[in-house]
Image (tube, rainbow, N blue to C red; front, top):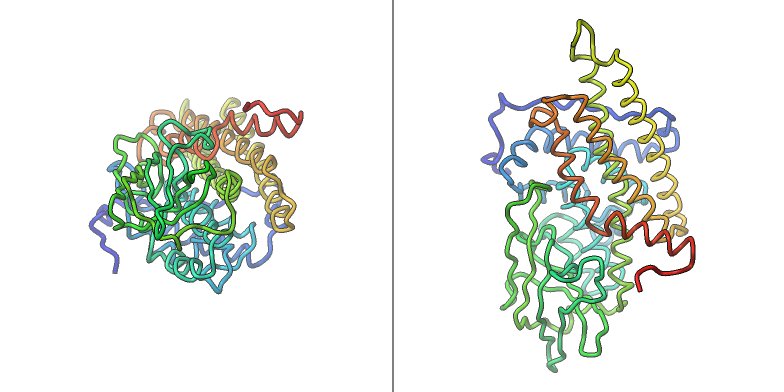
Length: 404
């Protein structure tokens, strides 16, 4: 049984009464399996995350027990084939899972999407059969937690400039360098690390906790993603077995493929945060009385709510169509960039407007608004900043790269 030491007393738990907006009857586009998955994950979030998340965030506490629970409900690697412990589901199912988890909290979704899209995906896609069998079942079940090492202190939006490197020492590789802003790293059992070989070519290596010279200092003082564990990866002459090199693909395109999968999940996840803020604002506007009537009767409040619903509806259609394209093998990187950029910016704006509708109560832990807003300030930056995704689209439109 998981420890309850990190959770507040039962009397302080607040009931989660969330239900999603569906103005354009988008549910009719989903299969019964999609709806069943959504219901299962939503119930999980209401039971295991919503009652405790404000306390976790206030204390900057990562509830490690949630990792095993995520594994039990199939939140890790839902598109990975069942033979390796995954769910064997389609991309819309994956998106729905990310939407429901981020509706609870962006940090919780980060834990799940890093595990599935940035750790399990590259091992499945680029790994050997032995690597798949060794790592994927333990990651899928939540027995092991993983992280993804790409960003460096001096190389964020320009990952190709990385300086982390490894040398062939005959019977092993010698890895040196550092990564930062790494979700899950302080508690991770393995890290999929991207580094340059002696010829300057980028490869992925699986680094395991306990290898001498490998450490994972935790990042403290965050105002965002406070319930998520963030840290560094430091490699000081780490001996990595040669069988830990991912053999299937090398070059910068390999980690960028992983980021495509994660960015798709973020597009759905940010939508979940936006819907939570909207639903909270809608309920509050009907309950809060000022000047003798609900504030929802005033034109400016109705304007805010109407604009929120409009943007949410557009974003719902956007991710559903993108998921369909991914299922058909037709989605492109610029299409994924458009969805990530649009939906995170939309969610941030809705969080800010919802905060105004809640007035002073919007800054308290009584409501989820300020926590979502702070979290989304990280989501708008990681896995491709708002402006970098704009330039990816610009290159697609013009055929001209603005990066060089």
